[in-house]
Structures are given as C-alpha cells and as structure tokens.
Image (cartoon, rainbow, N blue to C red; front, side, top):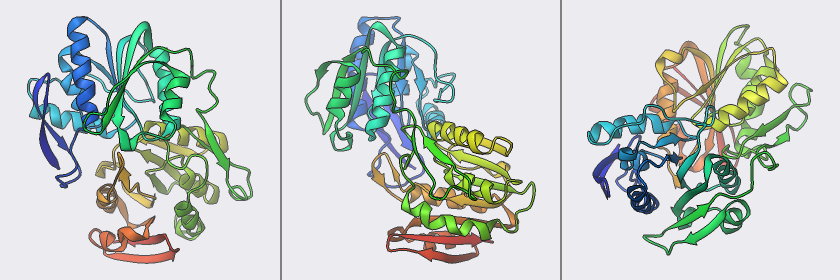
Length: 383
C-alpha cells in the first residue's frame, strides 16, 4: 500500500492506494486536483448544490468534497474499501453512506457532476449519455483525465454527446472539460451492448456473448481466453452436479458460460470488480442458460468465506488505470489459494512476460503448464 498527501481546498488529505507498494503509484492524479479545485469554487458560490462523483478511484474526489456531501457512483468495487480506508486516515472527511454502482445507479438530478475520463471511448460515450439524464437542465459536468490516457477520438465523443463549454489548458499533463447537458441519451444510442458469437458456439449451441462498454474484450474473444478454453473440459471432469465453480474476474462471463456448456449441473459464480461486467455476465447467462444455478458477485477480489470451490477459472487483469502491473494478479492468486477445496484446482491464463509461473509458486504447492503461445501461457495450480 502506498500513501501520500494531497493538498486541496479541503486541506491536506492522507490518501493510500491499496494493493501496491510502488511509490510511483499514487492514490490520485493531477486530473483529480483539477476537478477538486474547480468544484470547490463552484460549490462555495452555490451552497446547497446536488453533487455527484463518477468513477472516483481511491476516494480523492469523494473525500475532498465531503463537506458538500456528494453522491458517488463507480463501476469498480475497489472504491468501497479504498474510501473506507482513506476516510479513517482523514477524520475530517466523512465517507458517504452509500456508494452506488451501475447495478443500482443513483436516481437523482444533479447541479454538478464530476467525472474521471476513462481510457475507453465507448465507456466515455456511455457515461456522457448517462450524465445527460442525471444533470439538471442548467447543470454542469466537469470531466478530467491525464492527457496520455485520454481515449482516441475523445474530442469527437464529447462533441457528439454534451455541450462543451470550455477546455482547460494542460496542467501537470492533465486536462479538464467543462460541459453542459446535451441531447444525446442512452435510449437512442446503439453502443451500450456489443459482442460476438463464439466460434462453433458452446457444445454445438449458438451462444452470443455481449458486454457493456467498461468490460474487457467486449467485441471479440481475446487470444488469452481462446488459448485457455480447450482445457476446460478436462478441468471439469471431476466436477459433478452441484460442484462449485468460480469465474473470477469474469468480464463478459465467457469462461463460466463455457463451463456451463460442458457441465450444466455445476453451481457457477461470476465475480468481477466491474459492475458492468457483472451486468454483462448475468445477461449472457440468463439468455443462454436460464435454468442454471448461477450467482453473481460485484467484488474486489475474493474472500475466504466465499469458498470452497472445486474449480476457479481466471484470466487476471494486468493493468489498472493505465498502469501495467502484476499486483492485481498476485492478490487474486493468494485469495484463490485460500478458497479452493482440498481437491480444487485453479486454471488460469496470463501474459508470458509477467512470469506467472513464479508468482503462482508463492501460493500453490503444485503448478503445471498446460499450454503456451508466443504471448500467453495456461497454468493449472493446486495444493
């Protein structure tokens, strides 16, 4: 965990970024500083304004604006633990009573919305259209991001969705957009769901896998998962009716759906840090396997009380907020090792250059390579 101090209008905030000891990975960015500075000047001039923070990462925006009691909505479940941790370090900044996700977004009208600009153009398009429905007619949207992480076509995305009033100069390699409510809505936008049909279907069935904009590889099967899929049948052989299987970091649910096609009598749990991933996996499961015993968990990782599982399927993310790192995978490996049954196995795929065979050996007695390509490796781990 890395900790540093953010100086803002609210005073000095002690903010930690859980899950990493890298001192270069702070719990806020210059984009957060821009948003906080502008929001404070507007809110002090208009007391009583309704404020919403969208996709705060570690609590910098939420706690920095706690005096104004903002509502908060975020796709990522990691924000809950991060805000709880950072609120304890800053007694003068209160955590909100509820942190919403896209599973149950807030249903209010806001004078001011603060948005961290995501890296994905489709997700940005989705967020701006959603924000149009949440802003009051004379409301303001402040959106900021690090310039190197802004999605391609971001200028066009903003122009096509909202009224762009001002674009700030670059400050510490960050930029902020000040916008009014636009006419574009989610109802009239075809980009909420995109997907693909699995080649050959699942078990000779035609299955389409769709996903919302914040979900990894939503328009085509990623090559790591493609390498892993042929190994599911042998991995599921010991799993009879009622065996508990987990699709960890499930994304659109393609691994869990494939497992259901092979052994429909299992109990399958889909878990992901992204609420849009959970919405996607649920939609796909209900469409293809409506009679299955399926559970869905929006969570940052895995706690021991969720186990034991006979089989855990995992294609771990290797980046967070534009930073390539193995700290998320290491956390998932450790958690998975504590949630297996005595005979349970983990089947996972990862980028070859990250050296996951060494990482897995830290948490499992046995690690076996099942497959490899120039870029990816499939492992089985147990014990």
